[in-house]
Amino acid sequence: MWQEMRDLISEKIEVEFEKKPGPPTVIRWRGQAYKVASCVQKVYDYGFRSFRFDKYGLDWRLRRKRTYYMVTTECGQALEIYHDRARNQWFVLNKLSDPDDPQPPTE
Image 1 (cartoon, rainbow, N blue to C red):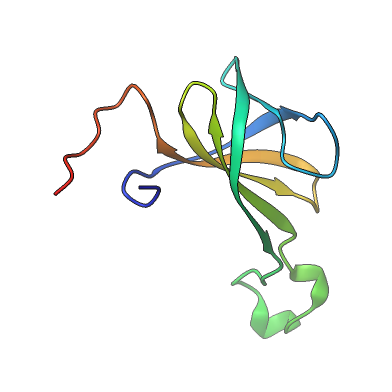
Image 2 (cartoon, one colour):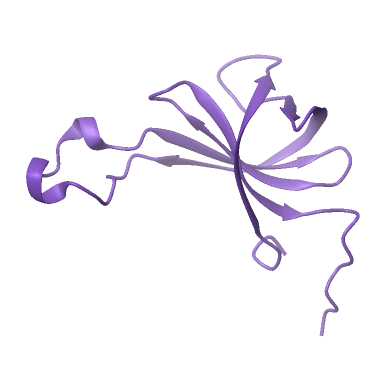
């Protein structure tokens, strides 16, 4: 289901929490607030950036420090969001499904 419909967004968002650490409870994106109904998945990314290996090698300072969340909102949208811990910024990465879009036929 989540792999079928992906729209790359990569936009900054604002978030609100009931308690930290944890997934956000409200996402503010494009002027609207979306209440998070559930967090389906949480993934930590400590991988290295793919550029500048030849110059710096595998230096720990070049690691990505991101936490990805796949969430569903109360209005039915499925979003992949992440927290860039190095910059303390939140982004919506992909729109995985939209309740207003027609669903593809299943076989």
